[in-house]
Image 1 (cartoon, helix red, strand yellow):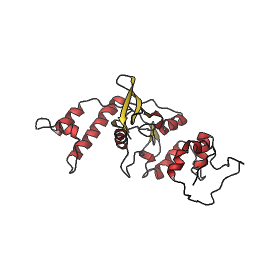
Image 2 (tube, rainbow, N blue to C red):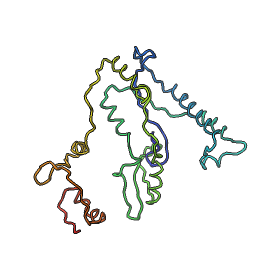
Image 3 (cartoon, helix red, strand yellow):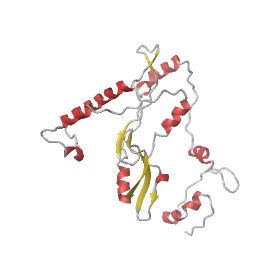
Image 4 (cartoon, one colour):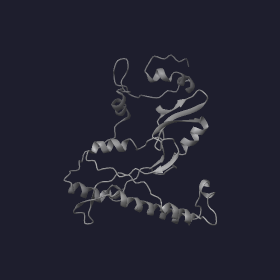
Length: 257
């Protein structure tokens, strides 16, 4: 689930990845699944509006002020749902891809993705933060400038509630079913499941892979560094921040405690 668009405005949408085959009810056959964009759109629209209608009857249902001001005795919330039901809802279906590495790379670019990368942020020298974004309506790049407080307000609007899962799995990959169904899928595909214990890479391995730097290697003699203890000196964090660039570049820094 994503809550943001390119200009940090609230634009809730879903990215869904699914297989083109599904397991039969008896677990003996993998059947091909055909996804039709023209059929998916009204199904998706009907299900979502049905959920909204049901939620609107529950106590505590909140109507956003921008919508509430448009409602009156002649145009009720149900009238709004009826109007939304007549609109076209965008459902984009991409063609199936057989290259699993491409799929993983594509999904990886969306998982745990921040609303905007730090590299796009600029300061205009007047305590404002600006960034460029692509306007899909005009197909042109535009510049957005916000105060620091305004930027923070927009940014934190996309931080999910504690415990809310932005990434979910379904079908034979769901937590409830994958223990029984996933082995059946492997069997039907003729794949063997490795019994080797899979360990997550350490931060040092990831840092070396991405940046070519081994943080556990001594910059002077090349020996392996091992943590033997932690000592907190008197130097304040603000003093270290002054030299963050030199520290990041592994340059010699003399800091007086």
